[in-house]
Image (cartoon, rainbow, N blue to C red):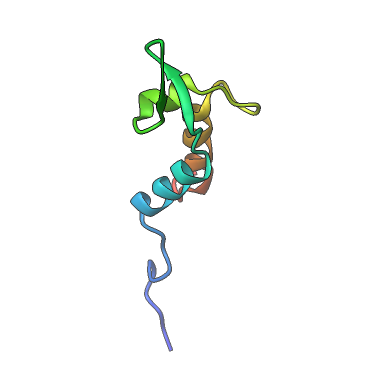
Length: 69
């Protein structure tokens, strides 16, 4: 049985959504107010132990999981 390529590929939106969910920072201080992190600007405001901020961590993990590397 021959299986064509791409049958088990992951969708980009699914990977990105999972990474955003995994690294969700919760409440962040953005524009001098505490807000839930609903936008990518909020992820930039959230510090992270392994990267400059949560946004950079999501980007780094995304490119590691992408087939383009």
